[in-house]
Length: 222
Image 1 (cartoon, rainbow, N blue to C red):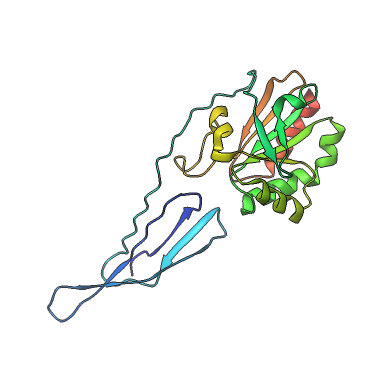
Image 2: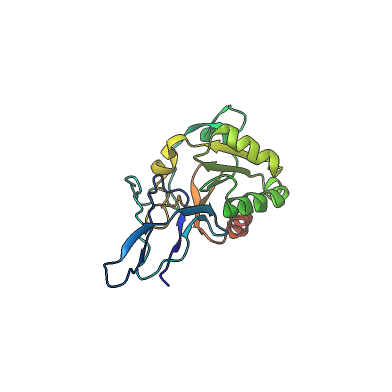
């Protein structure tokens, strides 16, 4: 039996899949038979692509992502990050400079409703009072639309701001590194102090809740 199932990040913008199985007909050459593939949500952080079993030859799977630009990290500890003007979940424009004078916890995440991002958002929600006591603003940023953010915030009762980074322009300007060779948007959190200087950069794709623990530790030391 040949391997006929893989998991790929759902953020690949273009995926072309084909599967061929072969039947032996006597002494003749194997004849190819196209096998339909199914695409379904995976419990992991992507999309599962699978087909029925294949005999004598492996499935042929071709994945063609669009060009991906991986930018080395530009915003680091001790730097002043680029400002931005983005729409929040209510369609209002929000500028980073608006929060100067208070600590800011700003986290980039891949997408609304994905398992890891939901865990992370809910972890920030559950600790939101601790952030308020520290005088900090919590801001989440992804490439989703304001409408998507609004539905996401309503569904999980998120009390903080979600910003829509259309085209991931701010993500690129900040140099947030991607995962899986750039095919999956990175999960990175920044703690910015009252003066607008970055004091912590924390990246952890697969332990979303740890972003909350690490940022609270930093806020307590400011």
